[in-house]
Length: 417
Image (cartoon, rainbow, N blue to C red; front, top):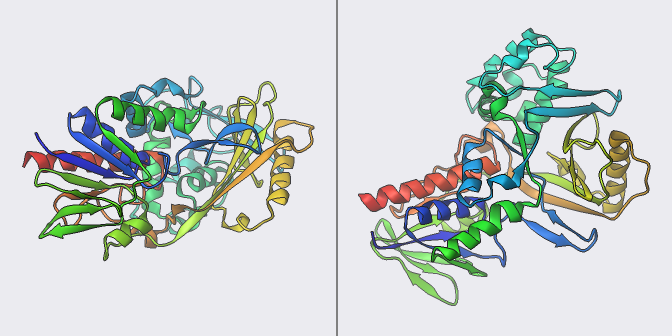
């Protein structure tokens, strides 16, 4: 079928839409305002550490079917590495206690029946108390749905939901939390094996997609920012990129896969989330000690998740608004001292980098979740994609890919009409 689909934005949502359309033999043109693809999901060389680092530490799970399928479609599924089974290492920095959560490899959450597999000092009744969360309304608070206290909450529920929602769990949307629980803990160990892009996000999720698109004949244009568009009735008719304009024909379509603020500027009247939360990541040039797990959950400390990469230790701290204005050196030293305690290291502060994203994700509260738009717009040939759109999930890579896939599928339906 003739016609071109223009993808505005080369983040993961835009790339996933472009790949899905290119695989369907649709002519695609990708337009990215920046000089590189990936958006918040990318890698870059950092002079302070002398290493290629990710702008944020992102963890996928084996049950993230859309994200894993996207990696498979661009030939990089093998680049998502993790343990052979769903095991998570935790440490409580206050007590020094270490433990493993063993979820097995089945499709049912039978691990909760095994005292040796579940969180230490928890009972089956503790897990049953989470049931109201599973099908809760998105408009309900987590704090009004389950008790946000106790051993299970502190050692598992709180770190899981904090990482997924990027807000303090009691104030988060119970519906979004329920979606996370359904697709992870409730789906058994087969859905919970942790996966990390060991060679970097760009190498696994971004650069191969750009290469595949170009090899398929698609155009990928950097430094090409959409400034506005013209419409005729209920369809877009022209894209304005400042120095040039692109006519949109009757068989063409547009996928707008940009962050919410530029999307709202381009589409006056578009309702989007307007409140955000920060994420702080820290990277240290230091070879991990032998035996340190690739991923460690940290309870009761400043650090929340510790990632062990070759020649690098990295941490993620969600809901990090309280940290974004602290002096960088002070923050780096505090984090490093905690890493030393967690990993049993005795070493001075190595070369480091702090990455603070003030607007890392939309605020996953009921109020802000209600502002997320769907993929369809008032224009029949314009569709939205992005982790901030109404995917049913918090702002995650999985949500980004799902939104791109959904926009691409709507384009295909439109072209067949």
